[in-house]
Figure 1 (tube, one colour):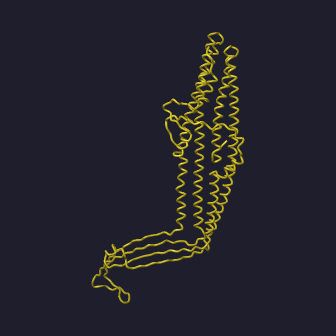
Figure 2 (figure 1 turned 30 degrees about the vertical axis):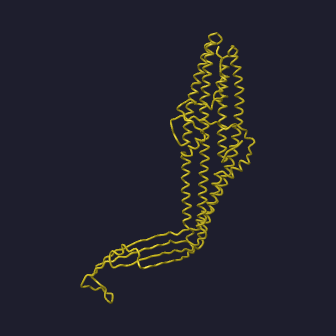
Figure 3 (figure 1 turned 60 degrees about the vertical axis):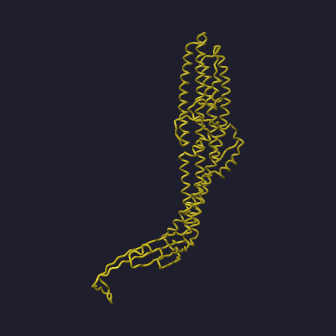
Length: 452
């Protein structure tokens, strides 16, 4: 008589998981690091965040340019023609000429002008430059935060795809054990230990398990599509995910206060919020500087010459006449319809709002770190309990198999033992990868790796 091999088959998905699809020629091996590198190059959300870096740098260059004058080089020539039939008398009256007088003239003009340079402005340009630099740093922090987010998202989807792939192996093992149990039941019917109704029950179990296997395969295809979307690439090939999730460890020794302090000190979201406060303070200083007097200077050089022929002005590169000018100006703001007061008040309100946003961000990060640590601890406890429950169910199933073979247990009770063991196998697999995703989430909230 055939011995049922349910426990060995049920353990196949957990013991042989690293070799999944090892012989399939159409699969593409993929580690988690490879998935992360691919996402860094192709993830649309992250790539979009990178585009803001160039804009922030341009804003800093613009603020620096406010300290420099504008320089304009002007080159010009004029060709003139006149035909006069009248003239002006001694008393300014118009008199007619006996002959028509015609003339052709040209001029050459060259100029180099330096636009207005502000010498004193109450520190407005300096505040604008500092605000632009703070904005550039805030963009860098935003990009770093986007990197944390996409890495955590890719990691979670990677482990979800690995779990879905191993669920297929588990369901295949359960289907094999169900078919084996069907053959055993048929053999027991032939010797008169079991009846036809037991065969029908075993056939129903096989059909249900076939349906569960097809459902697992569909979920695995969806999980692979989700992973490819996070990576920013789509392909028809099947990914052979080769990495193992982080080993189970007890999070209890982790110091939650130290983790919170670490997150508040270095998380990109907190840094970005703090830089937003700094930027708004510099903008407030810039608005307040508008009440101070301004001293500006401008200068220019020029050359020109007048010619009594129409062509000399076209090619004369060194006109004889020279001129130069330097001008100074002082502007003292007295009243501009409360525009300056409005700008100062708006900047002050923006500064106060940025401070509250920064405080709220710190509270949110602290709550998320503590919550993620609780979730990791719950996932660890759940995985431990699932493993213990699985061991008990496997031993119970072994005893049920022995009793079923000698006719001391009916098919209903055996099926119940098999279904409980199958649920325990699924729970152990699920909770194992829930711990991996909870670990990835904690690292995202913390802003860096978590070491047991």
